[in-house]
Amino acid sequence: MNSGVKSEQEEIKNWFNKTYSSRGEYYLRPVKAYYIYLELLKIQKGSHLLDVACGLGRLLEAGQEYGCSLSGIDLSDVAVKKAKLKIPEANILQANAENLPFPNAQFDYVTCLGSLERVIDKNKVLQEMGRVTKQSAKFCFLVRNSESFSWKYIKKLLGLKNKKGHQGAMDLETWTELFNENGLEVEQVLHDQYPLHKAQKFKSFGLRSVDYKSAINTNKSINEANEFLFILRKSN
Ligand SMILES: C[S@@+](CC[C@H](N)C(=O)[O-])C[C@H]1O[C@@H](n2cnc3c(N)ncnc32)[C@H](O)[C@@H]1O
Image 1: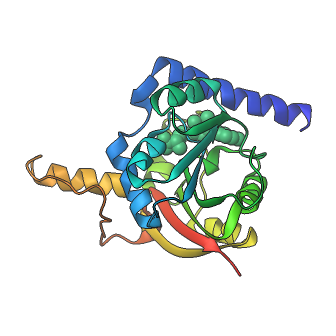
Image 2: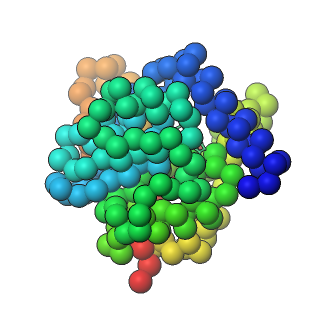
């Protein structure tokens, strides 16, 4: 890693350390928002799951209900410390997703939520995910859409583009190409589910209970999604 990249990486880590120390739990979605990823992956009991850029371990917390072995890594040592306290049975390590500290072909599932747009070398991260997974592995990514109203106009207006821990965004075609070039094939692409679950609750004036484990369809085109939820497998 050259010194420019090293200092950029340090800046990202410091931004997250500060955010997790000051805003703590409130920076992330609640645990109930994470079940959908595990449901879409159809997690099997006894399998091995790795959450890359696990933050405070929300996905791993939800994963405890599925009887699988849980691992996570994150760049932020503050996040890792907090996640370890919350989920002591999970193997959570401080690491850069560009160099995963695991042997080859270990995992059945990889999740990476709200994070791939924040890493410096996406290709390296995807190659590493390919290396540590079995041929039958499945992958779930939540990534930002550069064509969304919020990214194009609101974030631009507020000067938040490419700030806050190195954010980024790409359109559906570019994300798909990136995954394909790194040996992954798309099984499913959905709108980010949490805003749809929240809208369902809001429309019922909070009276209807929401099944956070079921996917919701919307009439809006996928190109309008704020974030894309990708389910992928390895190409043969
Ligand atoms: C928006 S948070 C999402 C956290 C978690 N995936 C969740 O949904 O609760 C993004 C996370 O990416 C992590 N991150 C950024 N760059 C990383 C890298 N190169 N390697 C590992 N983690 C990284 C940050 O420390 C942060 O915890």
